[in-house]
Image 1 (cartoon, rainbow, N blue to C red):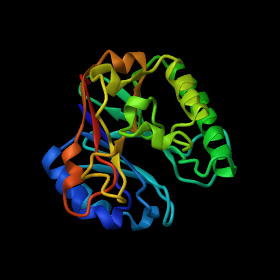
Image 2: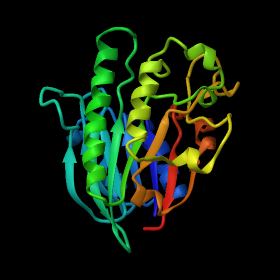
Image 3: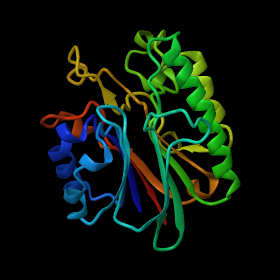
Length: 260
């Protein structure tokens, strides 16, 4: 089973590009971030025609997450637990029924947090603490669990082409990295780094200042796997070439293969 995550930066603007990539890559499951659409306006028919079941958690003009799955989806829930007043659409989870076993998949769009310090950074850290609490609950199920999406975290300096440019950014502040590590150290495997080592691997290139042409990227889109899911992993990669196509997102798809 191939599961991908993709921050598409607006389903309306990137609809055609997303369909082209789906036709080419044909992943079994896709976790989408920043759909920037209410549920009713999401163009689900285009994906249903391609054999995908569609579940969304949308928000007008901002945020928004979705799951596309060629396999049946069960027990879909929306919104990260821990704060009933949080109206931002950043979390969706469901059980995917594979050929051999069920897998709990969680799609997330973690807050950016800039400018830091400030209320947006406070929200980011509080959201990450809620994520850690949910991650603990998911681990307690002792079932295969995957949390994938745009984490807005540069885990280490090697995950940025110019780490010095991110020293004061919410994506790389020590508090941000420490919060990410606290989640990983619960017992998760960061899928890409379990397969690929070294610098030069990025999933985001800004639209400004020729970042793509100069390969001035960062790696902020991640999969965290529970021990039961990590045991099923056979490969993980980044579809880097997608960034060079017409009207691209500033992110590219990241994918993981599980023997499920």
